[in-house]
Image 1 (tube, rainbow, N blue to C red):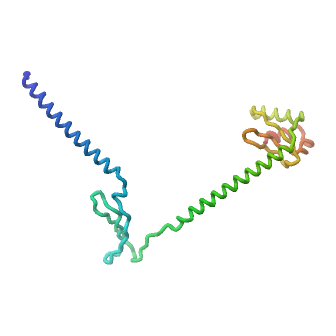
Image 2: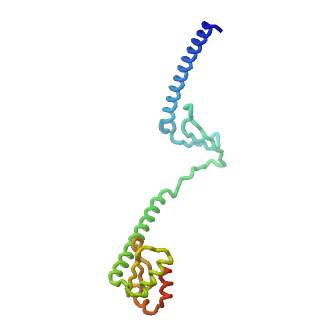
Image 3: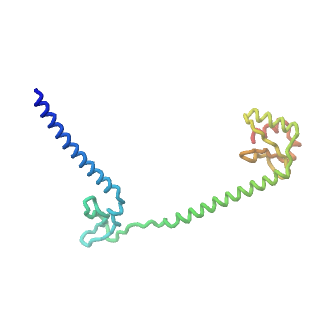
Length: 195
């Protein structure tokens, strides 16, 4: 091939390239147009379903909006009798009431827990912090066994009936006052480990 033939071929390829670019640009425009059509709200294309019972056909006909060509869609359902009814959702009103009753129950439980915690806090103020040597040693030994590093004070009160642990952030060990009198060090250790 000589230079003139190569140059002619080059110009032909340039023309074809420009034509392909124009076609691509047109296709992109069509694609953008289609995207806009798809992004339109569905309410523009659909209507509410209409139910009709034609006399000639014992089946149920449902007009369920428009298809992509703009022609109304119809769905025919065969039925065994003329008295075909579409079931209505009967429980829809109860869900609102049930959620309100549930919420009231949750609020009552939260209020009850707040009152119980306040009551225990008031009882703790009446109680005294135990400084007995056997209690302090038993608590420290149990903390080492369990791997607890925070301070856990022990409160004794006549208002408390059973040993318990109170508080999430600053836990306190609550003991009945008379329990210290009759428990041995080993029994006290078991009580502390349980709590």
